[in-house]
Amino acid sequence: MLRLEKQLYNFSSAFNWLAAGAIMIMMLLTCADVLLRLFRHPIPGTYEVVGLMGTVGVSFALAYTTAKRGHIMVEFLTNKMPKKAQLIVAAAGEFFSALLFGMITWQSALYALDLKHTSEVSLTIEMPVYPFVFSITIGCLLVSLILAADFYKSLKRIKG
Image (cartoon, rainbow, N blue to C red):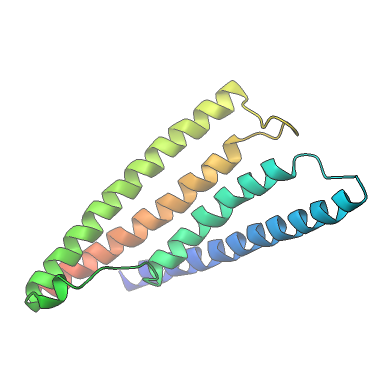
């Protein structure tokens, strides 16, 4: 299991770098568009590209944040519980979160395939949309796998 966890962490780290690249593209494109607007030559489709890159940035950074346990957690109730109860609540949360992200993965894959089949494109620059929906699929799949691995570790801690 340790090897799988390490591979998931490496994947999430690599995708985090891709998310950083997407955010960098968003920043550079927005700055270039603002500067060129001063000279009355805006970049067509900037709003679309920034929005699509936002999906890549968020979905690819999600797995790394999950692996690093960087999400906000409200623990004021669970901190007052016995240790075993805390572990059970954490395991239940990981289990249901893994299921939720698994369903999001499945539904976003179906949606991306539908967009590909119908050849859906963005309005201004007519860029295909389905690859960006697939980025949501990949990001959520990675989150689901990380949560499933965390759930497995929690079960082992509950037993021992």
